[in-house]
Length: 165
Image (cartoon, rainbow, N blue to C red):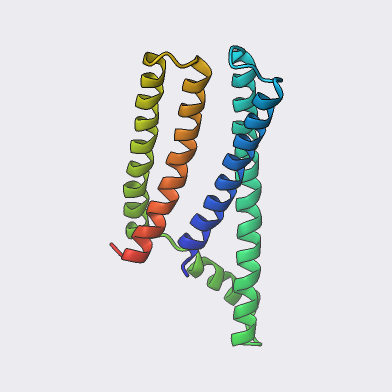
């Protein structure tokens, strides 16, 4: 499995965990009555907290991923060649993390999928208002569509890496 696939899977897992955590938290608050549908300020604050948490978690997960990947590559290099020095290990790590034009093309194609999902979510959020649902439904549809767009982008990247471009 390539570096890009491993990185994408790591991002997908952390994004999915955050999305599920928000959904469970929001559902439990709503069911308990501590987050009424009419209190948009509370819902906006909850969403902003999860956006901030998502940024922090993403940064920490990517740092941890790159540390573990570098250690794994270094161990493999030492196993292959016990006399391998630090420069050789560093070269192996750089070779593992190389990104080329194909990777950039895959990122662009998958980004398009994510934007389409976010755009559809915005469209359905507007329709929910038109149908008379409370504004909090619209907010949550938009929030989930952006998360789903991010997840779809990762899934599209995996698909394109497996399919080959």
